[in-house]
Image (cartoon, rainbow over all chains, first blue to last red; front, top):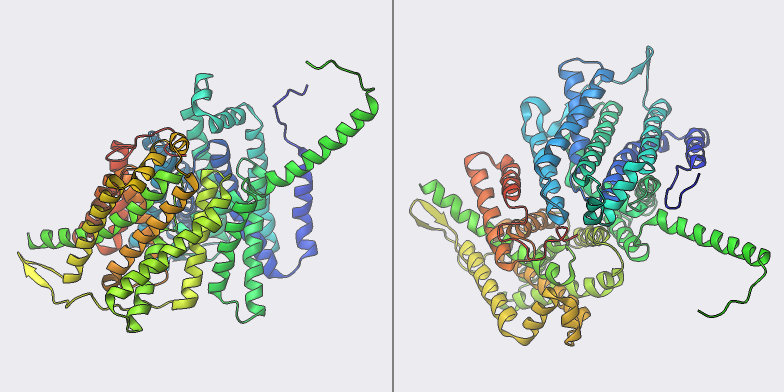
Length: 344
Length: 292
């Protein structure tokens, strides 16, 4: 039975998406693009989590890179200094980021709006400073190196196509999980919180609990991305987990369209594509320096907000929706004999 | 004791700059409800424009006026070209818009002024004055004096002039203000002009102390934003108090613990205060969803 207002996961979207993942390494074989696509997958995991937080729980986080960094550093310390297996450190990395988010969410439950945004920003800066300054564990600004590669059934997952598949396998899991959450009772509750917190809490939705759960979930996604990032690269340093990175994740969600799981994914791909394109242009034309890349990047952010204030994905789907509504209206007009109605 | 006095003086100097930046945030926020994260770039532009003019041999008083005028024009253009066209966007999108603008301005500035820090001579002879075991440079005194002057002028302007009253009216109740014939677009434009001017003043005052570079805006913007939040977003006295407090935390943290840890210490204290007073020290009048 289909209820009005109840959205269901469109599985054909997931199938097309999986096929695209499988086809990509067959079509594009340069290792540069495979590496970029792997990075895009790692960022997509963070962006999907942040999208859930922003679009569904209506909260803004300017410190998502902190959880990303905590995930990466947890696994790096455990595998290099203590010699753990990477698979064993995965649950620990998830747990540490989730737990920290829980503590943070618990203490900051009284904050909202810009106050919460600034608090997450402050948290991000504190974590980054600690990564640089806590030299006994993090080795300071130079970072940790010698992080082991992942292996599965005795085979090492090398950087390149194998790691690409591993990362996008996780993206797929995160995507399906998020789509199911969004289209469940919890998702509807979250959407109602986003629209009006007061209305939803008076309808009996435990707003605080739902918001906390999404916050912890988004932090765990970021932790997972950090784990994937650490084992992809041989070394990590605090420079990957700055305020700029948090802003980048935010931009991915906003560009794609917050309030849509697919939007976050598409936003991520778009931002990476812009980065690669501008970089390639820079190699082609000498007047496009790395500074000029920033100029173009800033310009794209500006243009998207001005021309697509709702983000890319919702705008495109609404085009399709209006087109299909027009089509069905035409059919109805042909099928139904017009009846003269009195003007009421 | 000498150390404490020294750290306090340093804190007040840098805090004065944060206070002016925070006032810029509050000015735009109270009228347009936009958080302008490009506020730090106004400060950077102020400092670097000052450098260019002074090194070209323009006298100081003329450089002040020209710098403020130039940055004010940038602020006006930003509102006219960007913010006005994005009226339909929600608050988070508008933040992204201002971040995009700040990345854009930073990129252009690094192309114009390069990536080096630039040296600007201080306004007057800069031999430090010592008293009570602490030393203070005349430029630091200039910075504090300029901050006090800015606060006094802002107060007079907002409270005593007709356009200031209109400004206040449209921040308290935009619809009623509109019914009284106050144009919201003009007020929005005016708030950007005013806060760009504030940024320029902060930039030219601090230029001889911190040697401006193209990337100084980001951290100044964040500190200014946190000062505005700490005082209670939308409250001008709160912004000044917040700015001075952030400056003091920073210099105490750098002095007593380590300069590498100063940001972690500053923001930890910031978080603790925010936990005790979730709407800032002076509190915001319109709480709602915290401005979102």
